[in-house]
Image (cartoon, rainbow, N blue to C red):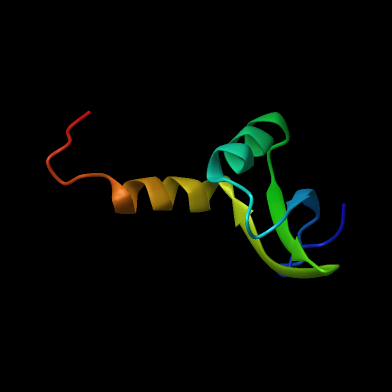
Length: 65
């Protein structure tokens, strides 16, 4: 698939406008790093830790579940 900016092998690639639910499904099917690619250039990377951080950041403070 390619190499992420971190030097890790990519498990998949995606575009910058791909819905997060699709990225999560891809990570569930093929754990690893997903490269964000546009016009043939790797712009960045997304891993499962990034998804967890985003969920934690946007979780409502009064939510305990």
